[in-house]
Structure formats: C-alpha cells, structure tokens
Image (cartoon, rainbow, N blue to C red; front, side):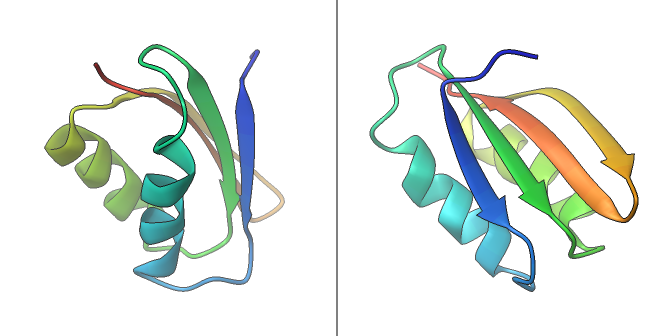
Length: 76
C-alpha cells in the first residue's frame, strides 16, 4: 500500500507506539497515510482504539514474523 510517511515503533511498549503515531501524524495533511511498524502485542488493540478516538481511519493492518504493520489515514 502506498503511504506518505513511516514510523518505526519496533521495540517500543504501550503507550509509546500510539504516542509516537499521534506525533508523526501531526504534520500530515488530512487524507495522507502513515505506515507504522510495531512489535508490541498491545498495539493490535491500542492502534485501532487510537484511530477511532482521534478520528483517523485504520486502512489496513497485517502481521508478518511478529511485526505488526498499520496503515493509518489521517482524519480531517
């Protein structure tokens, strides 16, 4: 999937992946997509909850070899 920005949150534990995602989304324009990689098992719950609460869209998520990848479209 195409994206406009990336965030490597591997090695960070809750709540840091979500906090870093919030900060990384700030300079993006509405509709742009952030790709975030994380390995914290809590991220599978935290990231969708963050998106719903903050008005962003979780476009896709996947897991491969213990790495969770999230694509977050910034809300407007």
